[in-house]
Length: 363
Image (tube, rainbow, N blue to C red; front, side):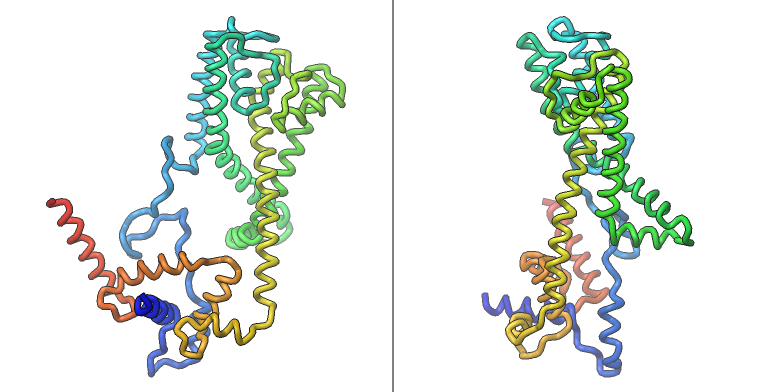
């Protein structure tokens, strides 16, 4: 076991900080670390030249990708609302409360159920309708949590680009600068956009309830707050036909937006604490104890790669488990066990994997 650990440590050092060739100048070593290109983004497919001709695998969900397009989101929402509206329309006589139009009430009841607002202005009266409500509230929450929030993220990202362009409209800023700005302050822009959209939704909802539902301003604002927080006391709600048409769209959008707001707030707090930790790790004085801990191969000398790995582990960027997984892949690819990787190693590894696959198929 000790020999295995020693081999992994030496391989790790050799992988990340190989000794320079005799005819190569030492001055290029520092630049080599700084100019190292990053891995390809997960959202883009790998090119065939870079090994393999295929797209990077994505997490799959029963209904498709976990990051659906607007077409997929609209399809799922339409199916959910369509089935819900049909079911609740068929049992409309078993639902009590303030009613307007049969089809509209069915869609409205479906929206109020899936967002867990539950005003109580429409309530199931029979065992059948109660069981239907239970089924649709669980499926509706799953739909919002797993799919619609991702669509909201996509909308926010589009608005982030517009916000950055607006802030730099008097400067000649190219696409690359905008992308860099978004990556640097992504969470801040996301928070600002969500906050602006949320305030607009609150304002629009309050004005609508005041003008159309004839509530006074305090009651209108009170109804808006109890709705978007899914508190839904039920003493104030959308009772007119026009109001319920508006509510079908507004309730869905506002509840999701508020959830995104609090999620982004938590992410900002986490990012701030991460930055504090990084600053502390970078600025604190390095001691002899640190050098001893960073010396992976125990040769009394800490190389650049060893120092980088030690600092990244201190920052919480990587874990021992991550390094072990990477080293396992490296050892699988290092067919000749030379401690380095070359094109011939990759070709040998791929041919051996193909041979194993063919053997299993024949069995």
